[in-house]
Image (cartoon, rainbow, N blue to C red):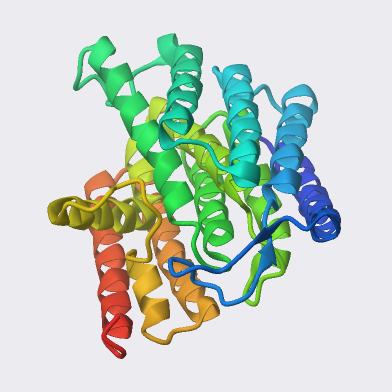
Length: 338
């Protein structure tokens, strides 16, 4: 990637961040006028109604930015069009779910279809598990990981700022990896534009937030981030693809395991994630999201270590950074017995 690519990408990123910020403001006005609110309940981490549906602004901005990048900056990776179609499908169904609710089984069926479409799009381009599994099992394993990531990203979207921070960390981390190691320019461009779009949304979602993503934002955003991570793994950066989302993976997976052991309904909304318990312990949304950002910065640094050819050091360092964050959240939760 030459300097011209980076200069154009920088200008495009600034424009997309501004457009995402403006589009989110417009969505806020429309949602407030229509009266679409997320109202607090015993499983909420907020104490007053707030507009829900910021993804109505974020998803179109990302899709249009990616289309423009594919046309004028660098060809997108293989599977680009199926991934966009899958994201739009998920966004449509998730918006219906935001408005009137859908049975979990219906949502899961649509998610499986979207992931299957995405896996079909990238199917012949390589092996996510680096040849450790036969091709059929490789694709099946990648699909299951992607499906889990879509859901965990939605589960983790429970306080102000956290999902915008995570999206910026993963997208920005992939850009840094692409600057240090071979990644296709189209993948780097998509990662950068998603990250800055998330920052534009974050201007309205940072604590105290003005609106929430809603499922229409968190579900397709998790899907697109999962596609970027799989694409990075297919291009050889498997360790970075594991390190960058490590906090979300750990918090959601450990929480699910804890709930499963107790016999809880796994798809039921709750407030048992490590970050939610820290808020219940008295930490502010901003304090918790800031800690996620600091951990994310460490994960980006370790992803760079992975890109430099030291994957196991990166995985160990990333695991340590996540463990320290989870222990800190446990400490915060214990202040009030949360």
